[in-house]
Image (cartoon, rainbow, N blue to C red; front, top):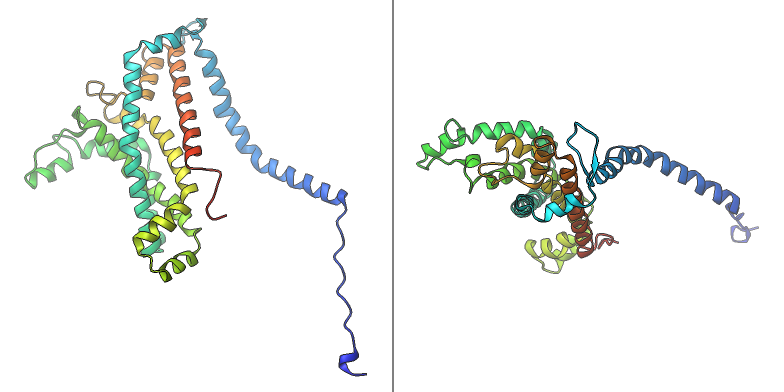
Length: 313
């Protein structure tokens, strides 16, 4: 018998999974997923959901922390409509966002592209991320000393170069710009790391194909890199804007809302009403309005940037 006449035995067929087995596997995966999500869910309920509901309840009361809350209905919300300082603080928070977010995002993206193209060094990434790992209060105190009009290092160096002494945190026209600059310096490393993670998920073959088509580096950035970074961009913008509207600690350490209320942003005004004026109900009403603004912004941002879609799919 020749080799051509011999036949090889067929490989054994894989055993078919019964519907009962599929159902059991699905239940096991569901239980595993719940086990992994449960700690975060408990933390969300305990530290976010329940305090939010409690703040909503308090917003309908007049409470000074020393006596029982007195229900006043919508009086706190009506008072907001006539409170010029509230609207001014909300406007200042929006102005701070416009100062902070574009530059923070642009610098972070530039750093990410530079690290992706020029270096793989873990040390460089650590240095870039280091400012974010420092305490906000510590960073504010260091910059408050460095930018001091009389003893600060920055003014000392500037005067040595023939420049005029600058007030920085002490000037009504410079205080908000200075706060924004400090926070841009602190947070752009984190933004860069987020963008770098997104860049690493873009297939290199796309750049090779674009180069073969004659695309320049600038064209590849606008037509390949930016569109494929859209999910990361959505995350960065939503979280950055939300965090910027809640800026407090840097202002509390450096300017305390001054000079002349030029940095009294919305969260600072809320904290002042709650713990300096003892208007906890009124402060809670303001926090509910701020939360509503954040929800509306997030929904609009995610719809405009199509957060549920990916160009890599």
